[in-house]
Length: 189
Image 1 (spheres, rainbow, N blue to C red):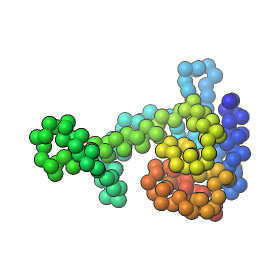
Image 2: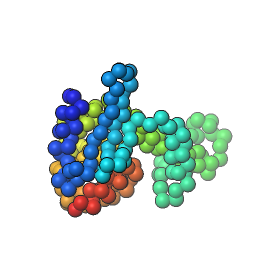
Image 3: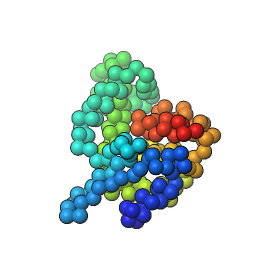
Image 4: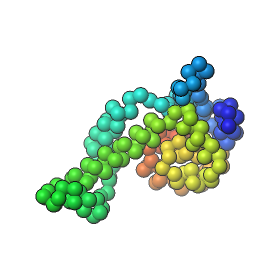
């Protein structure tokens, strides 16, 4: 589907209170076919979500540090993860240290997932995810781990006031940009 048609369809699903405030923008380069171009989601004419950032590795490390230093983020470790660490270290590490290593691994994995979900979104990926959004249910989009699917569902007119209020606990576990769009939608109720 052409970008203009896709943009038109996505904007037709915007909730009435956000129409004109939330925009989908894309850049493309006619003479550089190997460049994917960039996509933006703008709120009130400000680019809020820039897809296709070059500083991924630096942000991954910063995200990992932020997760480690934030006392509000609770990352549970189960016995399987501790056993995996025990096998990897061949059983020579003390029990209390195993928990620390397992938690550190899980935090690093979580940080990588967050940054990968953020930075892997170029214009072509946006088009793929947007087409997927148009073909699946709103419930699937909200429950998904994909940041972009969550955002598209939150600004959709098919998500009513009751559902927005009922998913407040789920949104606390989502990426900060998803939380931003959730707060934006809450402000329109």
